[in-house]
Length: 169
Image 1 (cartoon, rainbow, N blue to C red):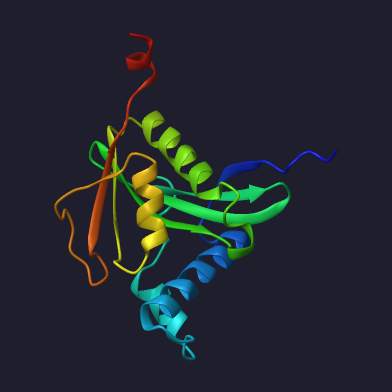
Image 2: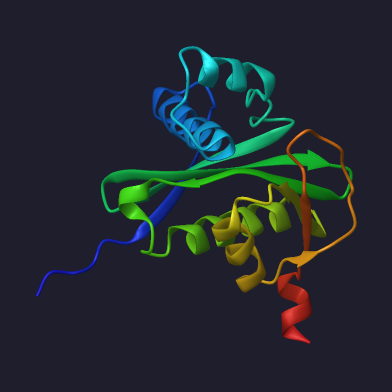
């Protein structure tokens, strides 16, 4: 019997080739789903320029890359805000979906946010990203009033983070 591959995460700079590949795949899917058609030439590049990921690195944030076994499988980013963190760029490659990657990424970013002293994680997402909204709800994120404005922000979520000391009580 062969052991199932496990999910692992590691931090990466957004300009690392693996990160750039995943961020391009993420943005391609966002463009395709938003327009309900294939991306036009230059459209993904324009979207990447409109919503850059360069700040997902120290000191303003972080980017995690996820692997399922040896396979590059997904990513998630955090942007640091005073006392909290904003979750962004949550993506699992289609071939690895349904294997727990979304849960693994959320657990990893929550752990990193706690370690950085954040008391909550917030995010915004689009109406058409129903799988993402369901993932967040399953993992304790609750819808909140709008905390940000943006052309694609239609739902806002927040999760209060608990700290290890609170669990010991």
